[in-house]
Image (tube, rainbow, N blue to C red; front, top):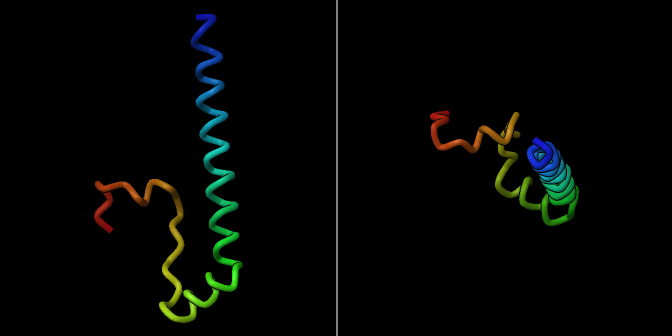
Length: 60
C-alpha cells in the first residue's frame, strides 16, 4: 500500500502536466503568425471538446 499511493500521485501529476503542455502548445501555435496564416488558408477546423475525440472508436 505504501508504494501504490506515490505511483498514483505520480501518474496523476504526469497527466496534469500533459494537459498543461498540450494546451500551451495549442494556444501558442494558434496565436502565432504561421498558425493564423494556416487558419486563413485552410479554414478553422472544429475544436475538439476532449482529448478522447482522437479515440479510434469514435466514429464522428
